[in-house]
Length: 344
Ligand SMILES: [Zn+2]
Ligand SMILES: [Zn+2]
Image 1: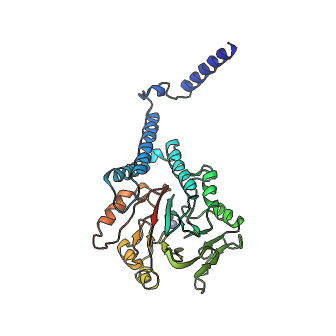
Image 2: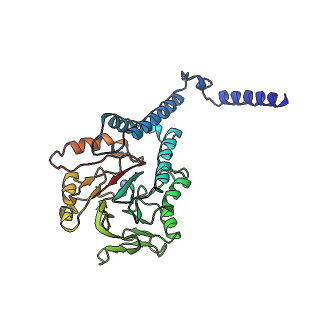
Image 3: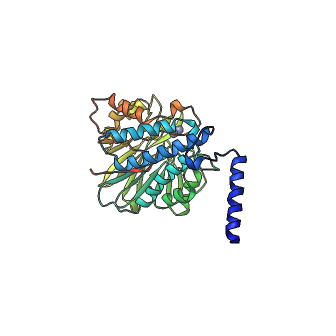
């Protein structure tokens, strides 16, 4: 009996606290009048859940069925509404999807490459013999990262090497890099980045001869192409998984003069999958330069400090691809926490 009285008192005090702190006392009954932010949180939560379900029903492929397109465009709308930034529905959505990546990384690849897309321009490519991360970050502010430590470090722990395109925080995270080095895994970064931090964190020396880096134990070769975002070094990482396929991730490639050599990449490398930043300088010429068999764009919906017109959207990527009908190169549009199996 005493227990029930205590419970009742607790409930009463909780409900008084809820009212006095301005929380909606009728939220359990879905009555939102007068509680605008509660309404928006409820709506975002409902929409994120429906999108997650839809994306799991209509998986990534070379064609985008209308329900999947609607899910992606709805995601654009949620992620371009800054009211949703750093809210619980967003954190729940992204962590639920990253948790699936963490789990799926245990599933072996027997042939070809499995390509996972992560926030923001992050990719993990898994072959039979190697699991490589590119631009792996937790995202968000340091005091409340988008992806929880247990998930992002769990993912990092399943990878054999980390390649970083450039120093910007939406691509490079020193703590993640250190976690690789602490496990004896190599991290390849651009010229001048994190010099002297750890012998396994290795800046590429621009102008040096060693831009082809062998990873014999992983049966792969990394070719680093000397790209730029404006005037900062931006490594374009071309990873050749021997016998299984070659992928290229462009980081934040944005530099007019670099196009003079990018248009000739196909003469030197046989690229299977190109993973360009969705806003790369001259998308069409860049694609022609790499001449891949498949395109998987990255960097959509970066929730950074800049204004929403540069968050980039899935619908913009769709329009961009539609505007290049003569390319005849298929593309797979993925969001965070999805993967696609590529067979040569
Ligand atoms: Zn950048
Ligand atoms: Zn970026």
